[in-house]
Amino acid sequence: MHIAFAASECVPYSKTGGLADVVGALPKALAAAGHKISVFLPRYRQPKLDHTKLNDAHTVIPSITVPFDDHYRFCSIVSGGNHAGVQFHFVEYPPYFDRDTIYGTPAGDFPDNAERFALFCRAVLEASKILGVPQVFHCHDWQTALIPVLLRTQYAEDPAFRETATVFTIHNMGYQGLFPPDTLPLLTLPWDLFTILKLEYFGNVNFLKGALVYADFVTTVSRKYSQEIQTSEFGFGLDGVLRDRSSTVTGILNGVDYEEWSPETDKFIAANYSSEDLSGKITCKRDLLTSFGVTDPDICLPVIGIVSRFAAQKGFDLLAQIVDRLAREEMIVVVLGTGDKLYEAMFTRISKQFPQKIAVRIAYDNALAHKIEAGSDMFLMPSRYEPSGLNQMYSLKYGTVPIVRATGGLDDTIEQWDPRTRKGTGFKFSEYSGEELLLTIKQALQAFKDQNSWQILMRNGMSKDFSWNVSAKEYVRVYERARQVRAVPSVTVADTLTFAGR
Ligand code: ADP
Ligand code: GLC
Image (cartoon, rainbow, N blue to C red; front, side, top):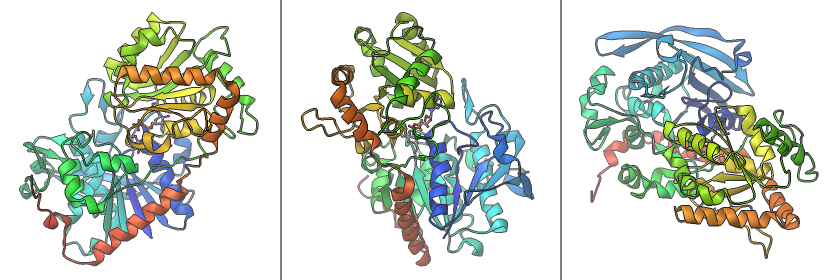
């Protein structure tokens, strides 16, 4: 099958979070299973962009016309070559993408994000008519949501796409691409999309909603999150749309690219180790503490690691509630993250308040993220909601015991440790409260004191296999079902929606 991915981030070219890891890894797994895979990405300036991988970059389509209200813009398509069987194409339009950051500045999102990603979506469709139309477009998050919308509206008559199916993956319901109504004429989209059955959302245009209405199949990144987002607590206002489509909504857990995230081969860590020989982990712990400027560390103290985007989703307000009491415990917390100024300020403040206990680095640093996975004893993710979460799965492989809130993918991947049966892989709490968080951290710290059973706990996690093979097979099944929908002509999903009872 030929599957074309469209996404706004992908390792190793651009990354702000787990989306990039998924778009970097799933295509490789599908290509290894024999599928023809192309990946379309914007060509950013991003400093983290790995230029060595773009050495053979060359323009394959010099000009694609993208209409806007009263003018055209002209972008080009640059081939990034074929890596591990995956063909990369970049949409090049420097006025939109050659910027310091991907989505915005600390002051907020770029004001032209609707235009930027609409241009991207239109360019992907036009480019694929020249480079080869896939059987399935697999689109990710609101930035690519217009692809399924365009295919079933303005491109509905295009013979090139008659049999092309679309699968849309929600990585996070919290980001929807909400824009004012006049975005529609600006992007030359028809006004008849502006109804409650289509893209209209409380007087605005909602890109994500468009994809949920028009994609043939909708997936999200864990089984539990696929259920959660159909409730008002987690649906961010779109739970009703998803409930109406529930027979075409599935949860497929993200996998881990163990070529990038394994203590046995990791290039960024001070010593490699495995579940058979854990000795290197102490070297990693020492190196980690040195990286955080902890001089003369007591290596027996448990280290709790955090690597995260700082966003309300991640639950760090709970940590703020209990930090005074947590700081009395025998442990060290190391934190790496960037994002909301609010949380950056909070972490900076608590690291100044408890310099012996909490070390903070406000930065985006991939090498340090690997060091934290390897050098910590525990990894903390108290998320308010978590579609999948990758770091807890990375942590398991590094023998770094996750402490998580039982939500979304965190609940699906971590099994509560039971000291009597010696089964389980981590520590979980359900109620979103500082008290529960503190209690759970204390349980973990207590368990750490019994090093014999702790090593069993570590090895339980290290033996788990969350590689992409299983999930890639599930995606293939979804692609096949989506193609079957396309084989039955003339039904658009939007036609079948009734919005009954709302
Ligand atoms: P999300 O996508 O919501 O941010 P995930 O757990 O799915 O959460 O993925 C986060 C990814 O981003 C992981 O690969 C993690 O290591 C990485 N990451 C997050 N923040 C940083 C940071 N400050 N420096 C380096 N890597 C980071
Ligand atoms: C999102 C989610 C995260 C998920 C990632 C990749 O950013 O917040 O839980 O792992 O996407 O799917």
